[in-house]
Length: 157
Image (cartoon, rainbow, N blue to C red; front, top):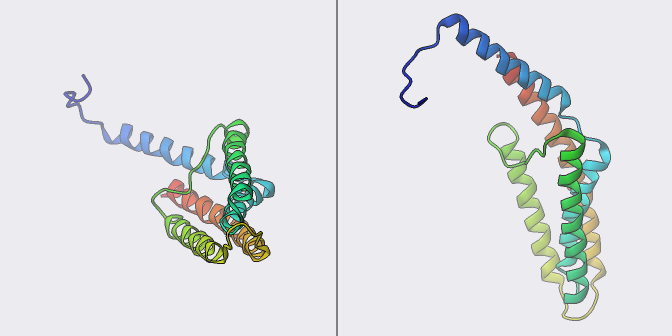
């Protein structure tokens, strides 16, 4: 039983284990580079959701379905390409940026929803979606840089 195993690790084994963790983080930092289309896909999902909330129900529903389908493709593509999906919700240097992205997207969705006019298409909702797409794509690129730098720092300590 491991929970009752009170063996202590000698300093040499502890240093070797720590070196392996640092090496794994350094390798992960080197692998943690996503193609531009992946960042744009994230921005597109966010932009579609923002644009959707201003539109009539049927049209909004179609946009949401497309956005969720793209999100599934994004996760599956990450897993197929990289063997993993890295969620933005994690402790560390990326969390403040993640929170900022979420707050921005929520503010844009609120602004878009406030434009909603029943059964009439609202072009301004699409403009807010385009702005959200651009900002979230840029923020995703920045998030990657912060994430990689954080992994590199952790791997070198």
